[in-house]
Length: 352
Image (tube, rainbow, N blue to C red):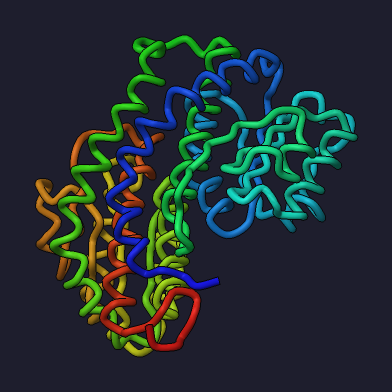
């Protein structure tokens, strides 16, 4: 399979339109399947790679908007160590995420959860796939006309489906709150923030690529929904450019990787508005004090330039539960520019 680097750029620019196009049909499907979830108290969300990163990014939406305990576990970990016990499974919803629909561990986890009595849901972009056959219900977010490249639109489609599932789970569980009826509409309006953020990111993405191109390791840091975004961004740098990038929680970096050498390792920090922003600012400042080039993903109208070498701007206003849709946009643009600068093809160290 020939992977197409230019497709990454096209996919970044398509993200906002995808939110608008997928929102209506996925919401309608989520509303239908959620009718049977009123007794759900625990949600397990599983997948591998981008699918797991989407699960991490959606955890806050399930805990805050649906009022449930949410466990985002990788496919192997859920299957071998984390499935709900039979005596508690009736209050559990197991969500298996696989854009291709073909992940065998996700399908097996859904089958085993079903035999224990849990509700099961497949989230995928591929109708009629093994994961949909293994689940009680499915949310399908189709994305036609994709050329092979590191997944950007598929990640966002999975994340959007998870966020809509959280909104609908909260609705059937009676999580009444001021403005709650507008949550689904509010989620659709994130499309504008995604488009504005993409447009603002492109002029700066090349500078970030220049900053990290020669680095032996690039760190990407975040917490809350931003941790899922950090994991996703690190994966795109690896997949697109073959660059060694890794993600870490803000606080864990302070305790471990802050001590790593060489001192000039570039550090990308997701500092989106929300509960962990203040800590993200502190960590970015600490990284810069240690001699690390620092790139901050933030609303640059808040003035983060004082503690960063470069700022990747966030545009619009988005509640934290939905924020990963916006704060993940930079990943594809920076990965594209890095691969272009290094002259490599996606999923390969061969020259493009």
